[in-house]
Image (cartoon, rainbow, N blue to C red; front, side):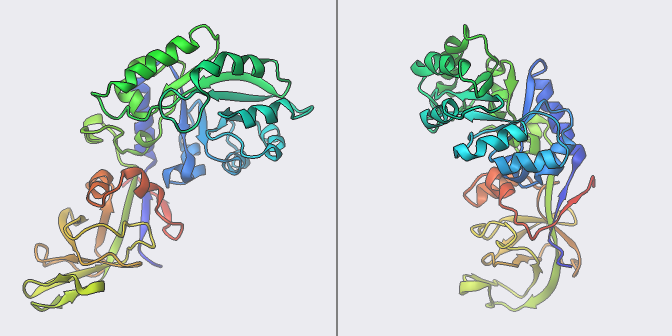
Amino acid sequence: MRPARALINPDALRHNFARVRSFASLTNIMAVVKANGYGHGLVWTAKTLRDASAFGVASVEDGVQLRDAGIKQPICLLEGFFQPEELPALVRYQLSSVVHHESQLWDLEHAGKIEPIDVWVKVDTGMHRIGFPPESIPEVIKRLKVCMAVGRVRVMSHFPTADNRFDSATPYQVRMFDELTLNLNVERSLANSAGIVNWPSSHLEWVRPGIMLYGATPMIGMSAAALDLMPVMTLASEFIAINQRRKGDAVGYGGDWVCPEDMPVGVVAIGYGDGYPRHAPPGTPVLVNGVRVPLIGRVSMDMITVDLRDLPDAKVGDSVVLWGAGLPVEEIAALSGTIAYELLCCVTARVPRIESTV
């Protein structure tokens, strides 16, 4: 069996959920489990977070999968339904939906005789991605409350820059949203992970943690460790070869990296076919027996190579940590020109997820 694996720690996930609760002690928590639970496994994540008030997903298919797995909590489609033909599935599986566009509102008003669907009205308070303009919200709420296809109505928005503690746009969004919704007599949700950590006035009745549940920081300039978050995923593999190379030997595709001296080179069974970032540059650390050693050469589809001059006793079969316990995913992401969200979500299906508390 190929040794690449993603070790998934349920204790860490529950710990991070408790950290969310410590920041927002009086609110309902909608745990965001879209993108296959940020790469950790959709059903596994939801079942592990049994104390969540609700779950947020990206598609009807995700909602159905959770219901078929026995998940009883409310489930919200965070992008809403995509076609009116999906409405019967929302009814059958008791899925709530974000409503962010006039087309969805029209579909609900013309849905005919169906059981009412709970909705979250999305307000665009500054993200400028999806959502109704603020000035239209009273009329949208009015239309939804008289729509026979709609049950409970709630309101939400989303932060684009809450990860910056010194941002001026976020407090403006909070004030706008608060003023807009204060007299609507509906439950509200505004805070994502960064809002939970840094903007307590945004907590309201519901919070929607995503990345912090999985142990990565949602904040600029503040590490996950500083927030007492634990990595849930440890991506690991093993050495499948250790070879002695001579000074001047070129390693990997393109021959970009040349051995500066005679040296041992380790080959690890992991690559971009597994979700390890192809653009990780030479010098990106991996962890072997508690020691950081640097990547050399280009990342291949199935393999990477590392410099073992500082670890001459390494042997074939030794475990290699690519990120996770002892090596923050944010560090690898930053070196690779991306974000932790992408690395976690992009671990591919051929990498088995294995529950482990080690």
